Image (cartoon, rainbow, N blue to C red):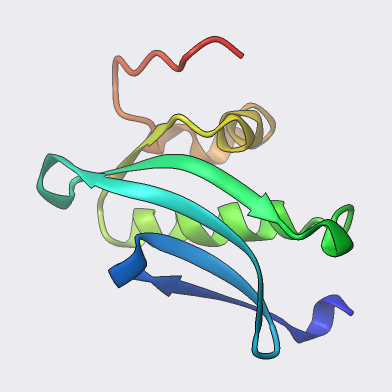
Length: 104
């Protein structure tokens, strides 16, 4: 099932989306801050029928790789993105210096 999954950036809606064919099955929402230098991630979700397949992790990896390619940084307000960063130290350099995430 996961071989049909596509991840796309939809900048006009400020989100990265997971698609299974024509169906949107998940997304990571962000706000642009500091004149585009920072992406503040607020929420990540994957449809219930697709949970447990590692798709949220693929989505966030894609999003953070894209942010890195733009030379931007992040503020991880989203609990899933914060948890992802705890597991993936290779992305922690993207977090804006001095950012203290809200308590879980």
